Length: 300
Image (cartoon, rainbow, N blue to C red; front, side, top):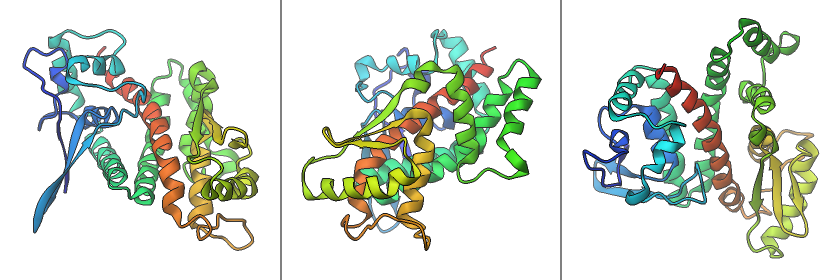
């Protein structure tokens, strides 16, 4: 069993003390703490000592390291205007009963993802991240449509997901949501996910570049490798589609379809050690926005 435990020294009068990991902490706040790299993960085994891993990588804002002295910055991840203590505690109480099982299962998958990455099991980490996105795929459009002031707008969005009376494909709900979300979020629309390939010019980089251009770009032409810098670039609104492509071309192996040759890439681990941390950063961005929407709904 993997548990999320506190890694910062919050005092009772600390500005961020309501975010302290405790039994009564809503799972949505645990997920935010997890993605901001400010907790510990403890794996408990029946016949062995517990394994402790510090989740010290900030996937929400990779350029910012949260320490105890600047932990109030966590509040700015959630609120545009910081609530006073009484309001903060009321928000926490109200959030405990909101979609608890959904956020609990999402938190579990994200914990598995980070725990696996810390133990250098990158393929396992990618699959846990994919399962997280499958859970978010259904929730994002529902939360997004519930925020619309006009029922007509919400209806148009939801009905547009099912084109030609067909159910959307893998992560289809999430991809439909991101398409509409990008129209009203300029920062998201213009942002790109930039993934540097390590040891550019080395044997692995050469092989990955060849296969990426021959296999991935056939299906995801928007995700290109710059052969001068060795950086894969994908527009933020297209990352979910790229993740589906990577998964399918790595593991589905359909006849008549070009697939990644994992043998020549020395297995899936080198590939996913490059990609998964960046995909998790993108996931943290998307999750935090719709988490804010949920939290703001109980602040009214």
